[in-house]
Length: 339
Image (cartoon, rainbow, N blue to C red; front, top):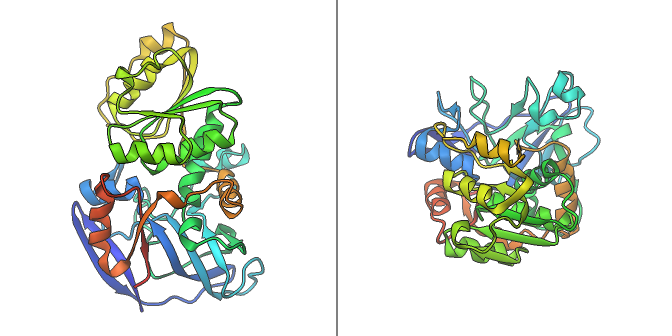
């Protein structure tokens, strides 16, 4: 038996025992190393939904995880018992038009662990034990912690946003929102050669974290900054209409805005501003090959994610962990661990 964190609806969370499962051919059973509570997990916890994806039955969330191999099924050769691994929550079909075009994050038949997009819901990774396909695992032999390895998925989102932005070499980049994804976008922009990285967030702690991980400047609000018209690329990672407005005011004519945050369903969109200033407005959803890039960056510590990890709390205390994760004055990335 193993413990699992289960969501039933808004602010309704329980810790339950689940039976152990043996891995089938091509599968691996893991013991959770660390599982990061993401913004989408918090949306499920607070509102019972994340964007268009609503909880319709009891649901185990969690898609940012590392683990230690406990058992392997027949035919598994890439990992062995006792190894630390990064877990990619995405399991695309590999044959739909999006997959064949090299955009597997847009797979028509995506199985994404910890998402309520599919019904019946597939359980996510906030479990002490879970079974996944070998293809979703990357072994890590370097001396990095399981907490760091669990940050590969959010770092991959930041890397994908930067990839969608195009070349950043020598560019001035603004990131709105300095939560986990915003900070990962700051790290990714630095890796991509940005000359100047700016960040906005109304939270004092969040701005300090953005500076810690590589931002040159951090301000509470783009409307009170001196950045107007100076930005080549803006990455919206706050998921708030005022942050999007800040992106629009900060960018130059002909610039690009990348939306990573989940904005409200009802939103006035400045289509005419996009047209008259010839702005490129693109979305960035999850990640594709960037997951492998993220693992490599973390294992070499070219991306140092350690400052972002605020706390590691046992699954048995899941409610306390989620409540801490909601408090941006005290936390950036809260992770669940076995126990």
